[in-house]
Amino acid sequence: MYDFSYVRPGSIDEAAKILLGDPNARPLSGGQTLIPTLKQRLASPTVLVDLQGIPELYGIEAGSTHIVVGAMTRHAEVAAHAGIKKAIPALAFLAGGIADSQVRHMGTMGGSVSNNDPAADYPAAVLGLGAELRTNRRTIAADDFFTGLFSTALEAGELLMQIRFPIPLQAGYCKIPNPASGFVVAGCFIARTEPGGVRVAVNGAGPCVFRQREFERRLGLEFGPAALTDCAQSPEGLNSDIHASASYRASLVGVAAKRALAFALGTSART
Picture (cartoon, rainbow, N blue to C red):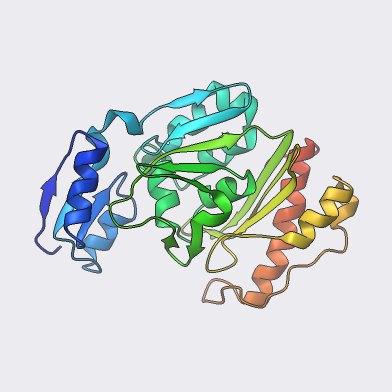
């Protein structure tokens, strides 16, 4: 690692002030991406701003219409929370399938969403459920938050504080992971809501999570297996690497969508 300073602020305002005053400072939440990056000397921040000492970033609130999750909430907490299991079982299932137990007990929802790795799980749930993301400055709609490869709408000194998920009528998630790393090669989160209709978010396949509008249109007409029978994802613009070609990822999107729909309908094992 390169040399850097370390601070652990006790408030959002203190953390934001440090980050805004030094463009080379980096926030540290769960550290599941940042720490390996530092070890590989791929990043050289001047200051690490540890967010673990800020109380308002923690916690889960389960209401009648929404689930609110603090940005520093660990994956394992989301997976085990009774209110989430009851209201949005697909979200609890997603959290329980992230990496391994060690990562789930250290990694945070806010860190994952803010990093916006194309192979991460949470962005699919955020976009698929049409969540709202509250920062120390504003509230950002999910459709406006994810802007590209490892990039979001967050500005300098802006920190994600909590994510507000509307409770859907039905929702399902399926990811097809890389067997070695567990990262998403292609995944799909499907949610049926009122009055918003149907949302379908695809992760892993492209440089950034995206909505599959044609799948949404068909499922909006008939929320059942027949709607996706002859649907196909175009390989144009999808990722192509040593793990999977763009055309193979396109095929996997269709598979993941059908499995996510079966999950939402309660007709298949959640795998």
